Image (tube, rainbow, N blue to C red; front, top):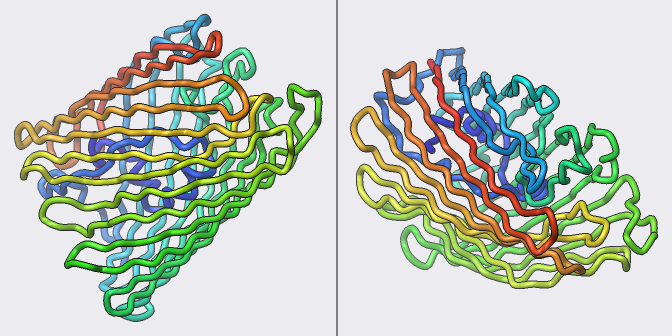
Length: 413
């Protein structure tokens, strides 16, 4: 659905640069979080000196048909979600600084082992050194619970309790423009610390650096080439099926070229294609080399309708002792439509493929998630969301179907 119906995502946008987080974790299936502004319904916030504060509260009741995302041990349950969040954003004419925090509590009456409490806080800033040069950065910490539907999530037999982990991110990026040439460089560090029993083998640090050079060949359009390198450093060993105790350390890189469009009357975003590789220190794990691609396009089809297209391919660290990497490919779209002045309709669809390098396992799945928002007034919205997950695998006991529905109210100022 829209950004107004996802307060958690709004809070995180204020503190997270999406790339490092997605790259470090299990590369979540992309969601459509783009929405046209609606002044009469958007939060106005509270003045706070040179800043403005945007508090929100989401209260949902719901149902989950398969809380373990399991083929055989299907458990259904009702649930309640309470999610307060706060975004504090500067109102300066130049430079920007924001702070954000959230707390998400999800309770399953009768299945309390699946209850969780997630939270996070952080900051993001942007410094305009001169008109053609700027410097940005972010730092944040989160305590999160892994979605059991995730591509690399451990099955319920290995993880009877939800997988909880801490994630620390820090990022810096530098941008400079000379006439029609644009250049940028960034560096980031992510640390993942798994707090659940018997999952310390997943603890790792990730350092990533990237550089991009672009050329504006037409007003609003640029061609670019981008290079990235990453170093994944594990703190603990894993025992492979060969009986060896090894680290899952690896070094990888990506080179892509593409075209990007700044915000125009019709379309914004980028498409790219290139080559990706991930080389593992331990010979127990197969190295990866493959074609990679990406797309993130927003099409403003009409004044009332927005269409978002997303696709990508990345290398995800596996949790199986048989393989070090999963080549994870996603493609999807989202449609948002303002049916009336008070009712917003939306639907997202995502397909994914997970190819486990070094073993026969391959997963295919999709998710569809329609929903609507009824804007009662500027301060209260009614949200209804449905999500269906399906996974088909050539590995025994890895298929599942999962229905989730949530409905409730979002309060904002």
